[in-house]
Each structure stands twice: as C-alpha cells, then as structure tokens.
Image (tube, rainbow, N blue to C red):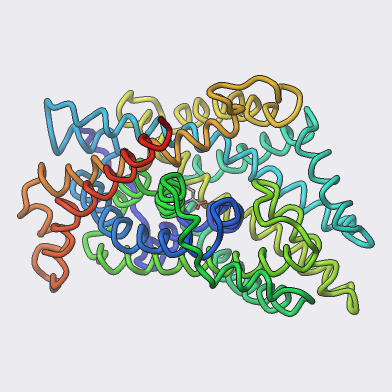
Length: 455
Ligand code: PHE
C-alpha cells in the first residue's frame, strides 16, 4: 500500500452528510415514486421498508466495516482483508456497477438541469397536463439536447472529484442537503391540498397484497439497495475516509432514516399530484417530470410568482442531490483506478468522466433515435437500470453479508463496530446474525423466486 497520507472527511457531521448525500438522490425522488407506481403502491412500500431496515442497515454497517478497516478503495479492500482469495471479484463487480449506474444516472441528472432551465424561463406557465407530457417526450427523445446536459453534469461531478474529498464532497453536501429537505416539505403541503389528491394518498397508504409477485419483491429489494447506495462498495469507499471516532452503527441508522423519509415524502408529492391531474401512477421514468410541473402550476395558480420560485429552487436542489450521488459513484471508480493502477487522481478521474460521457450518450440515445435497438427486450438505459439495481446490487449485498458474517474475523468486525471497545455494542449479535443468516437467505429467496416466475 502507498504510504502517502490518505485524505479524510474533516468532521463527523461532514461524513454523515456526505454519506447521506450519496444515499439521497434521484433514487429517492425520481426512481422510488415510479417503482412504487409500477409495483402497485403501498404493499411495495412495506416490502421496501423491510428491505431497508432488516437487510439494508446491516449490509450498510458491513460495508462501513470493510471500508474503514482496510482504508482503501473497494476492490483494494478485499485484497487487504482477504489476500490471495477470489473475494477481489466482489470489489471489481462493485466498481463495474458504479460505472454503469453513473452512466445512465447522469442522463436523468441532466434532465433535471434542463427542467431547472425550463422553470427559470417560465415555460411551465399556462401549460396543461397533456402539454407537460408532450414536453417531456419531445425533450427526452431529442438526440442532442439531453446529451449536452449529460456532459455538463458529468463535468460538474468531475470538478468536485478532482478537488478531493474534504474540499469538494463534504462542502457541497453540507449546505445543499438541508435546503432540499425544507423545499420537499413545502411541496408535500402543496401537493396534498390539490383537488382529488386523496386518491394518491390512498394509493400510498392502503396496501393490496394480492398484487405482490416475485418481481415486486425483487423491485423492492433493488430499490432499497439502490437508494441506500449499497451492494457495490460505494459506502465501503466512503467509509475508508471515516475517522476512527465515527460511530458506524449510528451513522447507518441515521442515513437509512433520512433516506427513507425523503423517499416517502417524494411519494407524497408525486402521487397526490398525479391523481389530481389524472396521470397514471405507472407512467414510469417520466413520472416526476410530468407531475411536478403540474403541481407548480396548479398549486400556485393564485400566486404564480411563488410557483415560479419553488419550481426553480426544486429542480436546482434536485440536481444538487443528484450531484452528491454522482460524486459518490464517480469516487468508487476513480479511487479504484488511482489506488490499484497508480494513475494520478486527476488522470483516473478524467478516464472515468470520458468513458461515462460515451456510455451515457448511448443510454440517452436509447430513449430516442435508437429506441428500436433492444437487448433482452430492453433499451440500453432500461437495461443498465435493470442489471445494476435488480441484479448486481442485490448480488453484491448477498456476498458482502457473507464476507462480513462468515469470512471476516469476528473480533475484527466487533472492534470496528465498537470503535475498539469504546462504544457499547448491544446490537452487535443481531447484526452478525442478520449478516450470517437472514440477509443471505432473504436475498437468495427473492432471486430464486423471481427466476421461478420467469420460467
Ligand atoms: N443512492 C443514490 C440515489 O438514491 C444512487 C446511488 C446508487 C449512489 C448506488 C451510489 C451508489 O440516488
């Protein structure tokens, strides 16, 4: 290992905010609502909550343990903790997942920038629900416009990554996260008071378990892992920058709770609004880009200037939430190339940014000009989403649980979780039990169940 001093997060709260910044993003505000809509509503949310609290938090703690005790990138971590074994492939799969997610995620992140501009130039005013649908369809299938935003977004990510951990990642997270939270709360208030909003509230609160199939289970698990940024070493990489004093268990709980609250609140913005203007809840990835402009326009029809201000602020903050997530994805791959292949940090980052621009462009085009071109029935954008969230992350989570539960020395895990015995560890045995038995069994069951359905 290199002897050069590794950078760290500068403060405890900075570390928590950076981790929360990675977790909270488009996964909560864009992906959670449309997955909820596609999978029938309240029952999906309950399964998602089970996956977050029973499977997600222990796996998050396992990733923290692996990252902080090895103090290196996610692939290097297995080299340090399990030298000479095949565990390194778990780290490498994580890096690949990070790279694929970054490519298609940046496309959506780019959309948020275009919508911030739409909001700022007042193009939501006097439009109809049908008009908003059209606006999104025309924009997202345009061959060059979304690509330009994608490039701008990746360059912004690149800029923060090159400035390093403490100056870049931490500072950006500290200011923006609280601001986003406040505006989300305001929007929930607006959305639930729209006429006809009650249908959306029922959709979120009344579970219909007859709709739960194998693919609903897999979608809920995938959403939980995606939203918590687990299963691919992202949290492992961030934990390698934690200080010795960071309380891993408490950080994991705090982040999971923040992440769930933001997702559920996003549901309470989107669905009441969708029902109010008669948009189907299963409209897919376009859902928030069609319903939200309606909220801004209708909820504030009496005071248009407020609608204008909120819409601009919302999309800017959403872009920032996406940015703190793309930074964490980029960091996984950059730290890997920098530490394992001894590239300079700058060169590693440039390589990642450049290749993601190319791959992201193909993802973007797959929603427009190359729409007919499909692999396994999915366009590139949907394929990347499916393969990462529904296969690679759960599989990664399965093996991370096995690694921390069975392979790692129990004393080592305990030392990390209790900060060398200085913290109480009432939950230690529960966490280990889940990692050893519950998580592998549940994840394997959900996979096998889904395969049976596919037959
Ligand atoms: N958790 C992020 C979100 O919800 C996405 C992400 C996934 C980030 C995996 C890092 C790793 O938007």
